Length: 118
Image (cartoon, rainbow, N blue to C red; front, side, top):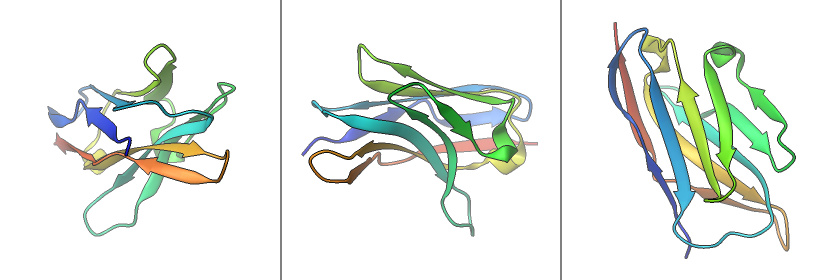
């Protein structure tokens, strides 16, 4: 079973930056989109950013202008550059790959902790 492997989380002061990366342990074909979600303590999981196979991106309003999602096509990886971090960005971040063919299926990473201190 192919897994998504995340890296780049950690502890940072408010105003700082972190870069998350996610890549599959094996081959995944027909990826429709890649994304990052997060779950803060006591809250539901929410979409942070998503990028489609065509390069279209969308972001949660709370991170627009601060976070940038991108792809490394050579590695089939997805990256999340997080700048101007705030305490409210503290959460576990999960990457997600969505496949539509032959059936709709979501791959999930194991999660990486991001902690922003004020």
